Length: 70
Image 1 (cartoon, rainbow, N blue to C red):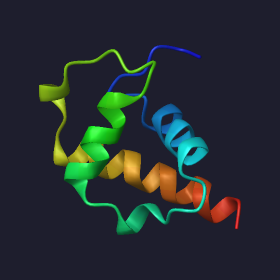
Image 2 (cartoon, rainbow, N blue to C red):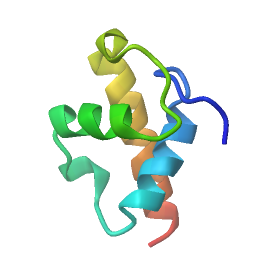
Image 3 (cartoon, helix red, strand yellow):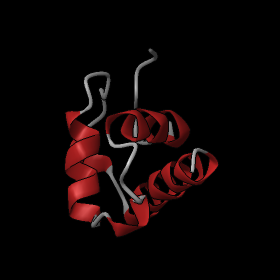
């Protein structure tokens, strides 16, 4: 897998979907989302560099993956 950063929302979303396939991403608080992203094995970005917009992009990409697999 490639190196994950705050700007690789689709790749992060896929990794999160693989870890939590039963979870609707729209129910996840941004504080939990931030923690889960920074704990991903291939995540190599500065945790402080996240923004609400970047977390929202990850959440929306994850939600799309979730919906596609329902």
